[in-house]
Image (tube, rainbow, N blue to C red; front, side):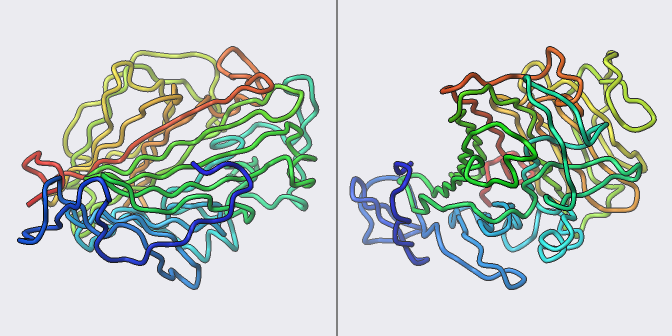
Amino acid sequence: MLPHGCAIPRITPIGRFRPPAARARCGDDPGALDGPAVCAVIGERTIEGFAARTLASGDRGLEAAFVPAAGMVGCSLRHRGQELLGQRGGLAAYVAERKTMGIPLLYPWANRLSSWRFAVAGREIVIDPGATPLRRDANGLPMHGLLSAAAGWRVERHEATVDGAVLTSRFDFSADDVLMAAFPFAHELVLEATLSGPTLRLTTTVHASGDAPVPIAFGFHPYLRLDGVPREDWSVEIPVRERLRLDTQMLPTGEREPVRIAPGRLGARTFDDAYAAPPDGAAFVLEGGGRRIELAFEAGYPYAQVFAPADDDVIAFEPMTAPANALVTAGPELTLLAPGDSYRAAFSITVRESDGSPGSE
């Protein structure tokens, strides 16, 4: 990661990348020397009129795209040309109406809150939808935080590495007066996307830069899909063991219950449920059509939401740093990040062929 304030590095055009330490080959290159195969891995393309930064694992056929000017949303993840992310209303609708798609960051809270005004960490929160546009749920409650499609992300690094590619972007929350009026905790966010072989990894770091603790309640909403496979034929693995009971407004009641979700065909099953994260780090799985997608919570995400509606061919395994509404209830599930400290959370998406080999024919 470059130090804060450094200029954006020059973007390497798409093409073959040969790290100086080991001139590698891509495929069967008779002129290559020793070392693993490394292909061209970074670039740019335009998606619905927006400039996207791309990371590509050429030998695995995997490409991810992010849009810094639209909240650093992960708007595409393609494997051998097939889109694996639910596009729903598309990128333009996400920017204009905050309709989630792809892999959006939900910040500073994930899912819904029960109130527009409350106190947390000794400070009053007043959410004004006129000042900070956001989504509302069916009950009129605020959804998915304040940074949906937000401008202000500054790319610090976008380059090939020895084993893949990296894209790092920073958002200075404390520099935005409107955001600070709604969530008065000075801090910075760093979002790093890395692509190595069959795995896309997203790491989010919060730096508490002010004199007050920062409540941590963010999450992501990765919408996954299997192109060309009927929804009922998708196979899923949801290895959770504890469900959070929800009230009629889809808010946690504070009660929990044991649960086991049978792996296998999705069929007509639907989900919009909250859980404790799998205790053993087991991955959530979506499989079908010769492709297996594994989503693993690697660090900092003790809670999960699973969303699979009947009227949209997507399923989301949502990593969450706190349960929904944790900012309002301010219970023991809510982490308060001390001034000067950092909070790091990471999850990964791995795409494999159905025979279990990582992303190779």
